[in-house]
Every structure is written in structure tokens, then in C-alpha cells.
Length: 519
Image 1 (cartoon, rainbow, N blue to C red):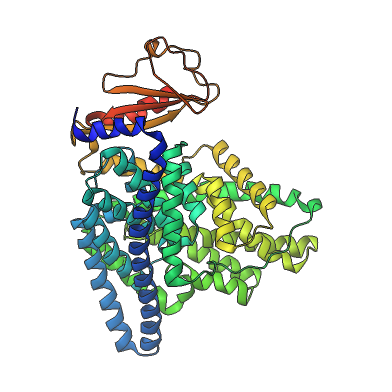
Image 2: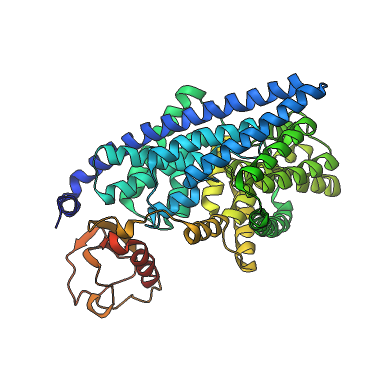
């Protein structure tokens, strides 16, 4: 048994001091992730401001426009070479972080950070419809991995730090620490781990604090809402169904757009040169749909466009977003997704207000409900979506309508049967990756916890009667906050938490297999 493995076992024996250790590590993760994400956020603000200055400068001058388009194409070539040098930095980065946590990938943390910073900033400078939130999740995770490697942490701690760094990155990007923590539990891990929750909350709050030092304490969106009367809640049922179908359609179209882009038989530098060139042209005629969508969000507050304009902007943003996503340029889809939800909510609200004579002040209520509703149907993380909207808007008055639409849209999307967006991207990333995985990294064991849900097939079974695999060892069973020393005749019950050591050599396979066993 190696030193790091002994350290992992020792932690189980000293539960009283573990919370202090987790808090300290959470602080480290929050500071590192927060600073990296602040740097990225500043870079994107500078890039977006620079883009608007360039578009204003070249306006009305054919020669200047030509130079701008040539520059955009050349920057597309640059991003293509960055993607080739560091493929794990392409796209949003969320599937790569999920793969690292589940043992499929082992990313080079400093190369990914460098490539993401340069590639993401360049993509936004050329106007691609990409946000900072997905990349911030990856940047936060990689910053945390860097801290873990520098401090020579054991693999269990490293994986926890990467997870919490991802949540901290989301917290710093959205000013949403609770949503960042929930995203880790609901989307990345899909399980509840008290140690992960403790470290995750500390790191997310710390990263949010770091972000607010630089950007202030204002929320991302500033909407004043009026609560929908209960007699009109039947509209929310319709809205939930519409958003559920819309979310499924979004997933299908985005994946097909990516497949279509791959079918273009041209070298990647040529393809991205074309993408960036087209983005440069779009910027000349429709600057509102460029980048993440801040200007579109502000438009809903300042001008409240008529229905026709709302529909045009919604469709244009969606089409350009699919085009940008398909290119694999570094950048995220979370913020553009929220903008699409806001505009779809605005369209629905505009129609509902005009048709049923609702109060005009309800317009913004439909906007924020739309954000959470579309998030729930696309990502299939309704709790994260609900909390995220609260933290984005600073408004806690709309819990019931937001929750109603979110869970209906989530249920509708599940009934239709398509996979969640990031699950689709994760599976595709696993299929094509050439990165080394944890499976061959070393003999070191990784500590993992598994909660036995109500109705699990292993409820009432003895430990010895279950095939756990030769690379997995149960080191503790926690029942009602009390640790039980596991024996072959120990009977497992619903609600038990299994603490297991899993060999890195088959980490991804065994993690997936045991997750299926305890269902």
C-alpha cells in the first residue's frame, strides 16, 4: 500500500478533523479558480469591447471591412492550431471536466488553461456566439488540478478538488455560488457526497467573493418582476410543455450541426477561417447576436421589442449559436442558452399578455421563467437551473412559477427520450479521445462514496453476495451518520453510504459498474 493510499485510509479514521481539512482545501480551490476565471472574464470583456470598437471603426469603408474580414479569417486559423495543439481545450470544456472526474481523461492542466484563455478570447473577439460560463467550469477545474498537483495531493483529494474547482468556476462566471455547487452534484457527479458538498460550498463561495472583489456585487441580470396570479397558472403548464419540446429540439439540432460541420471535407484551419470570416460579416449587419448575448439581455430591459423582433432575434441567435458551437471553437453554451430561454420566455409572455389581457409588468416574469425552463429541458438539471436564475436575477419572488415550468419542461424532455445535452457531448468526447485515462495512471486507489437509494436492488443483500469486482474494496458503511466496519455478512440497507477504494487501473469502468449496481 502506497503512502498516498495510507493517507486516504487515515482520513477515514480522523473524521473530526476532516472538515477542517476540506475547508482549507476549498479555500485553496476557490482562490485559484476564482483568480483564473476573473482573468478570463476580464479578457472576454476586453475582447468584446474591442470587437465593438472595430465594427464601429470599419463601418462604411470597404477597404477597412476587407482588412477586418482577413484578420478574422487569420484568427480562425490561429484558433484551429490551438485546438490541434490542445484538443481538450476545444468547445465548452464541461464534458472534459466530467470525463476527468469519472476517470476517462487526464488533462494537462496548464496547457488547457493557456489554450482556453487564448482560444476563448480570440473567438469572442471575432464575435462567435459563445459564452464564458462553460470555459470557466473547465478553467476552474484545471486551476484546482494545478493546486492539487503542486501540493502533491492524493488522487481522491485531486478529483474532489477538480470537481469543486468546476463549481467554483461557474460561481465566478455567474456570481452564483449555490448554483455552482449544485451543478457539481446534479450534473457532474449526479450523487450526494458530504465531503464534496463541504469543499464545494467553500470553494464556490470563495471564488464568488474573489469575483465580486473585481466586478462588484451586482447580479448579472436586473429584472423587476411581478408575480403571476394563481388563476393563470394553467399558462405555466403550457409553457412547460413548450419549453420541454424546445429543449429537446435544441439538443437534436446542436448535435446535428456538429455532425454536419465534421462532414465538411476541409482541413480544420480552412474551416475555422471560414467560420470566423462569416462571424465577421454577421457582426457588420447584426451585432446584437454576437458573443454571449449581453446586448440582447439588456435589450429586453431597455426597449422591450415587439413580437416580430423578438422572434427574429431568437431564431438568429439560435442559428448563429448552433453555427458557433459546431465549429468546436473554445467557448461555452450556458450563457447563450440562458439568453435563448429568456427570449423564448419573452415571446411566450408577449403572446400570453396580448391574448389573455395579462398585466404588462408580467413580461419580465416570463423572461426569467424562460431561462430556468429551457435550462431544465436542455441540461436536465432543474434544481441547478432554478437556483441559477435566482442568483442571476437576485429575485426570490418567483419560486413557484419557475419551479413549475422547470419541472414540467424537465419531465417532458425525459418523456420524449433524448439524452441531456452535456451527456451527449460527454459520450462523444469519450468516443474520440486520445488522452490518457486514470485507468493506466498508477496503482493508487481512489476513495469514492455511493449512496444506496430507496428501492435499490442491493437493499437487504449481504456484502459477500454482491460482485464488487477485484479492484474495489468497501472500507466503510455509513448508516445514520454512524460508520460500520464492513464484513461479508453485513446487510446493506436503503440510505446506506458505501465508502470504497477503487484502483485507478480500472477506475472509469469500475466507477460506472458500481454506480449501476447501487441503483
